[in-house]
Length: 202
Image 1 (cartoon, one colour):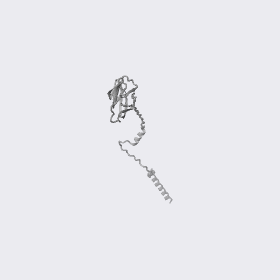
Image 2 (tube, one colour):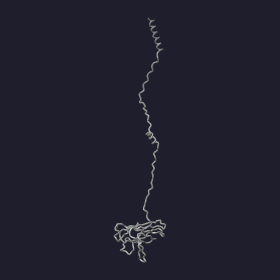
Image 3 (cartoon, one colour):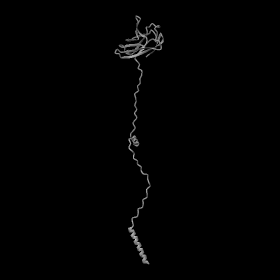
Image 4 (cartoon, one colour):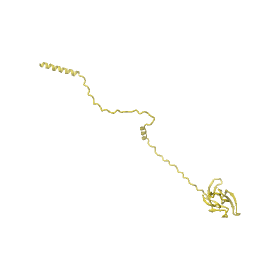
């Protein structure tokens, strides 16, 4: 009985030894699975002729803004030039029937040297006359007269149909070479058909 038990024990030990030598490599322990992640979706950007917004923004930040430039334009001021020549008349009104003068006498006031200048007078209505006091004769010249200075006389025979139209008398003073030194204009208003008044002289 004991021998059988011993033999069975030896046989079991032998099988165990044989099983240990011929056993296969144990299977590897499966690794713990990692949590699933969202795949990195990278899309190809098609090439276009339009600038990329991001690149344009970066370029804008990299490029300094243009400095503001203030342009100052010259201010041109025009003013009326005062002529050194001005007509003078001692009378404020004139009527051929109410005075013994041959006409409305006028002369030129100026601070210029006019020793060699000429005076060209013109009238829109009426006419100029020359008067020689010693002989008290008046000679009709016309609506234009040129003198070397002194007084001129203007008069009229008939008033115009429209008394609202003023008389303008202008004098231009020039050098002998023809260069203009200055000019002046007298405006006469009709008080009635036989009288004019000096309205303005510029």
